[in-house]
Image (cartoon, rainbow, N blue to C red):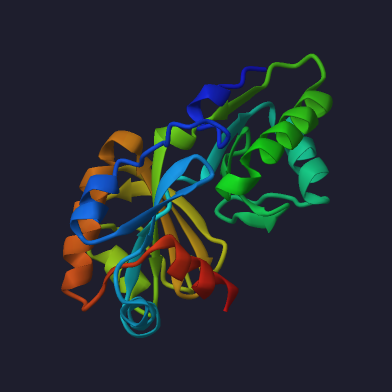
Amino acid sequence: MSSLDFLTPDATGEALARTPMEQLAQAAGARFEAREGWNVAVAFGDSELERRRMEETVAFCDRSAMVKLELQAEAPALAAAVAAVTGGAELEPGLAVRAADAWWCPVTPSRVLVLGEPAAGRELRGTVAAALTEAAGTRPTSLVDVTCGLAAMALVGPGARELLARFCAIDVRPAVTPAAGFRPGSVARTPGYVLVEGDQRLLILVGWALGEYLYEVVSDAAAHLGGGPVGADAVGVHQLA
């Protein structure tokens, strides 16, 4: 098993990691704070404006600092490892599972993408690595930290699906892709993933090098819908509501 821990910033270090969307967020008026080793855009001006965007139109938020782990193993071993960490969850094609404070997203029967909050990164990596080793035995496995390999953005609000439709052909209508639906495909004409976190909340992921491009595409589309950027604090409050 291989683990590329160096791809995820160490929250104890002095240097802050920066997402590929940071400069554009700064130009849009973001206020930043150091969080878990990252320079995070926590707010964009008036909190009331951020609230209205999320509740009335649509908002988008840089979520690239999320921990992202890619697990690969033979299907039975991988299923056993996931079940061990999640309390028995079984993954189905096209559906993610929310368990152990993370999203477990099946890409193929032998490949799973795990998404968690930055604060839980070190513990999540250790737990997953131990479970994968025990479940696989001597069979080959791979656990790679791809946190800095995938940029991520949340779309929040009643217009989230409409916003996605402006630059992505993946069908996220509730009848086709319900809550917890997970779809690999073309996002803004580049390979990516879409996760339906909730009725009015989507998460999109693309390659890290395309993060700035994604921000520009989403920002332009959101402006036509009366939406705009919000900070991590506003999205966190919305998630708890």
